[in-house]
Amino acid sequence: MKIALIAHDGKKADMVHFLSGFKDILHQADVELVATGTTGSHIQKAGFEVQRLLSGPIGGDAQIAAMAAQKELDMVIFFRDPLDKHPHEPDVQMLMRICDVHNIPLATNPASAELMFKALTQA
Image (spheres, rainbow, N blue to C red):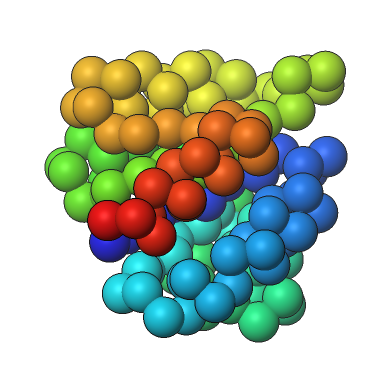
């Protein structure tokens, strides 16, 4: 299983906290993590193995969208900050559209991500 992880700047700590709650599951299961650059560096510092791509604003969101379009991802977790402006919002919208087009599960907040991760443990 390959899971893409993205978090806007105001949500990076939430992403690390979220993943820490599922550390055992992620280490036991055959799960490969891929993340945008800065999010990935935070995840690495928390002790997770993750493939880092470009930072979101300089192409990382597009790289993850391309992976989704090629059916290389099983799930996308994107903790968005809806209260802040993001210059790369067109990339964000494209990624979400690609997930919908290719039926890739997409969680945009910790509550939906938790439901998806709990489903992993029951599979």
